[in-house]
Image 1: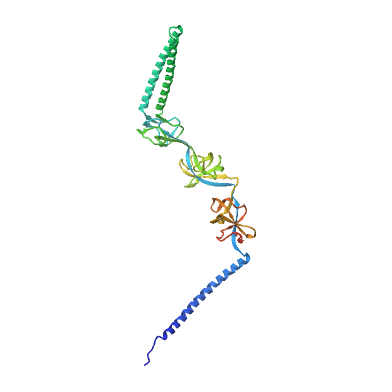
Image 2: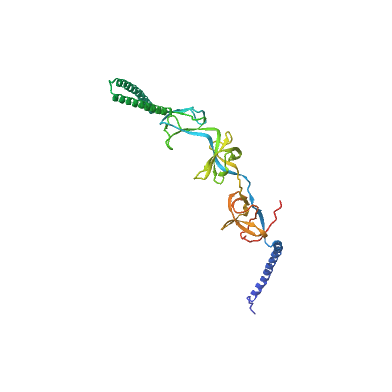
Length: 389
């Protein structure tokens, strides 16, 4: 019997398996090539047609324009009463009673509260007693001086004695004036125990109760009794940045609205400005007068939209024309022969789709929109026709 050796059959089997696999891979590659070939052919044809038409890359073109003379700017502001005053006690004492509360309408001179200060009343009693004493002393001294002067003329008394007594009488007159002034001072302190309204308005704050100890205001110390404000008209305080400050003048028209309700706006005008910038914030404080009774209350945070006029409007470029590189901001200006020149610019305000220029560019220049990163000076481009609406 002859033995069967399986080793010679192994290469044959591998060759038989390899042939179908190769055919399958070739078939798959053929299918992919057949599907991709039309796309590659169309892309090559489009590239050849573009190069044949222009010989360079196509770009979209925009223009450098000029901003309008009138523009609007919105700034934050704060609503305040037309007039307000914080009332302190002028003398130290205890609140005996108060006659008004928050929301009450008062007239100028109305009594708001009474402060009880017994020691001040005692001072007034002592001062008045000293005044009476000074008046009596003046009468006696003046009478003696007058008699001595008469006796001096008759030779009974010396002229020196008469002059000395007259000097005492003059001193008594001065002492009487000083005592009267002291009575007036203490009487004024007693009068300050009655806290009155300085003007017509509304009580918007009350900080005391009956029996509260109050003291005069010294610096930042002191007890606030009331705050009274005029609410028949309102003012809006707005800080205008330095760039817009020269354009804000008395009479400038504004629109005031709350951020939570922009539709409920109130028209107003700038009634006054500080006339100088704050050295810390570099802003101009402006006051806008608005009518009361609208949707805004005193103390509200609001937005103020100012309509400003500028004599020299800046140039404007599309935001998509900006080129930001390590050398700085540039725009690609289209020149003769569709040659690109990179021009240095300085950006002012960012308006979203447009940018205001403070330096660089010229009115009417054509600029490349969405420029490629490799766009350089001297590049030749093909301006694409504007899109049809």
